[in-house]
Image (cartoon, rainbow, N blue to C red; front, side, top):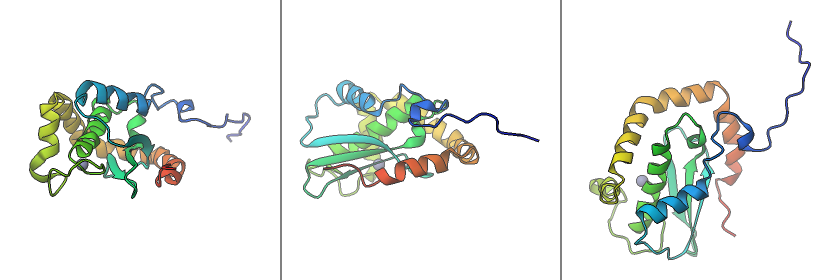
Length: 174
Ligand SMILES: [Zn+2]
């Protein structure tokens, strides 16, 4: 018979959980990526970023408030897990920044009718020296994402993250 003789410490922060990488501070990544690969782009409104819902089929999202004052980038919270290669996190943030540059989820002039027309995002990532990261990211996603997701789901992390991040889906824009 198993008896619970010890009380587990409460998990108050995502960094208390061993599988997550405490160094994956999303704001630090955004700042670094912007400086390194998008230095020619001046933000025309406030750009916020946060981890979001652990979607099964979406890595990131960008959207803008109706008053256009804030663009919000949401990143799948499973990308904090140490097992996910860093190139996946970097490529996902950069992908959303490309949408920002192209005028999607941003007040900048819209350059294309559709955000993914003719692989414009991938082409822009390549032009910005992110082709290698993109290639490695795609390779990992193709081979590993669904088995990885299933594993996180079975371990209970998907529902834990869902509960934690569902309230933030609507973002903090005020
Ligand atoms: Zn996209």
